[in-house]
Length: 342
Image (cartoon, rainbow, N blue to C red; front, side, top):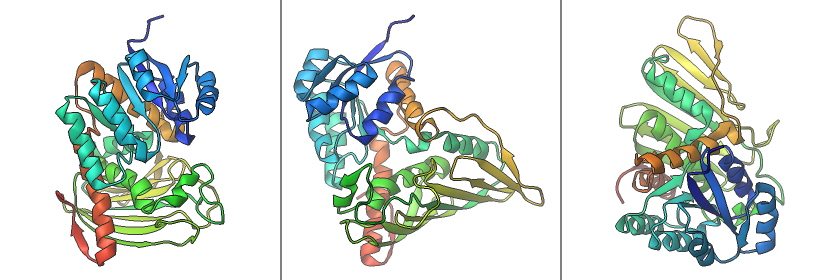
């Protein structure tokens, strides 16, 4: 058996930590050598399940003792800057969960901080890596739909109603900017991956459940540089037959040759023009939401090994974050906003 070629450390022990640690087991040539969490006991329980020997509540100690090849930051957003800077100061490549920082200025400053120190930073935006979106990108490239001209994304997780919404991630309730910042950015980034840059947005937001601080409903109309349009129709409070399906809703892409429909469970259907609707068979990577975490982490490692550019390199990912802030500005001003450098 080949020995791991890269040793990483993992920061965090919350809901998504277990998903990412499971994914690391499916990445060849990687060993997670240490685990941090502010509550050491919680980290120990997670470490035992994943065969991690070193557990600590001191990030500096973890980095200095293990001297890892990379650090995976999966902690609360308000800790990302300090932890990423610790890694950057030691020249350690970084995989960082989104949001990168709580503010636009903080996001820009952290990305610049890593760049100035020649430290590689990939934003862990694993949505675009879900198997169905990789397959849709392939179908678009093959011309199956012809020229796409409109896309409709329906997001309905169904987990945001009642006095105790978001039981898996209760900190969502305290986020002053919620649906667009936490989940909408996934869709903007994925739409950019599929169709290119978003030029303008027109956004409406509401808070339906009064027990949370931020918005839990948003409807965004987008226009792309290539001329096509898209609608992101999202809320987390509607009644649904299933909660948090793999796709969190569904998608429909209309093209000159055919329409593509993505089901809540990742099935892809094609409706050819003047033809019969059929299900398109494809390989789905095992793991959380179509293997999105597994494929993103494999990409991170491969880029570290061969020096190629991350798909969600820090500077490139700024454009997805710009979409989020343009939406908030649009909702505030009731206007169409350009997505451009701030």
